[in-house]
Image 1 (spheres, rainbow, N blue to C red):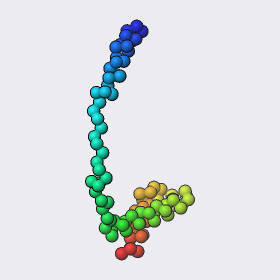
Image 2: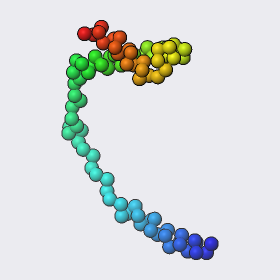
Image 3: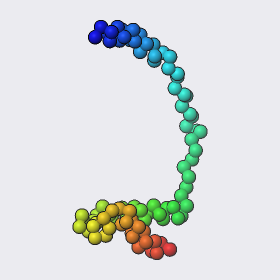
Image 4: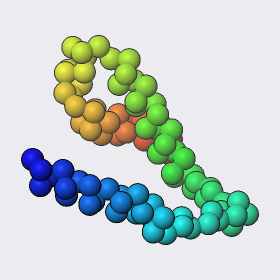
Length: 89
């Protein structure tokens, strides 16, 4: 017990000095240096629209309908994309 108390008393100054020894955080980059957002290609935007539509349909299904369509999102999404893709082409 006494040895733990001595060790704690000797280690306490080290914890107090540690923040002073820490490096300064790097300076923030200026806002003008940020790259512009890339624009989506027509195929990418169509894929995102299909994903949003399929997600909305999935959230609208009841539990029994979800099991009939496919028990998990990936299986349902695959079927949904195949169904919606010909409509966009």
